[in-house]
Structures are given as structure tokens and as C-alpha cells.
Image 1 (cartoon, one colour):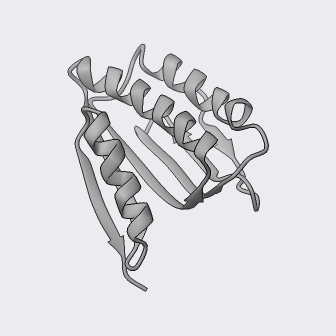
Image 2 (tube, one colour):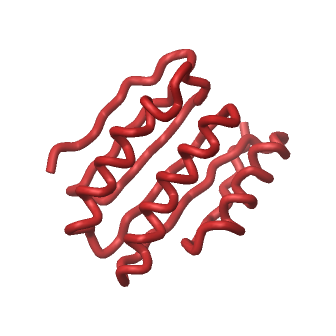
Length: 126
């Protein structure tokens, strides 16, 4: 399965989804003009990956900021990961946030309360 690599811009995050390592990364800002269009390849990739996932899938999310429409799309990505987790495969979501960014910590906690996948809150100390 081919990795999914999307170079980040001022409005979209860097995306690295790698099936052979079982590592999924989303980093940067997520304020695309069309969130659904931007996130569709990520959800499609996870659909394909979920057919034969690795025993452990590690998810690293390090977003500086995301808008409301992105938050729904990120939830869709997490729901795909939840399905993989329910299929008796280990999934860990590492939610990175800046040490003084209460909003981003809270966003991670909100996702954690919705999605039945283990979350690790990781503070980035500059």
C-alpha cells in the first residue's frame, strides 16, 4: 500500500500516512478552504488500510490550529481509527500541544471523550 504524503502549506497540515510502519502523522495548521475535499484522501486511505492494519498503529497529531470545518473532518479520521481499534488492533493517538496552548489541549481531550481509542496528551515544551 502506497504511503500518503501531503506537503503542508500555510492553510493545510503536513500529512504522512505510512502503512508499512503503521505511523500516521498530521502536523501544522488546518484551515483549508474546503476541509472535506482536503481530508477525503486521508479517510479513503484509512479505509484501505483498515482492511489489513498493522498490530499497532501510532497516530501523531501536532496541530497549531484548526478551524471548525477541519474539526469535523479530523473526527472522521479518528472514527476510522476507532474502527481499526475495535477490530482488535492497537491504536494510540499521540496528541501534541504547546505548553501554554490550553485550547489545543482541550480539543484533544474533547476528541478523547468521543473516540474510544487510547490518547496520550504530549506537551511540547520549547
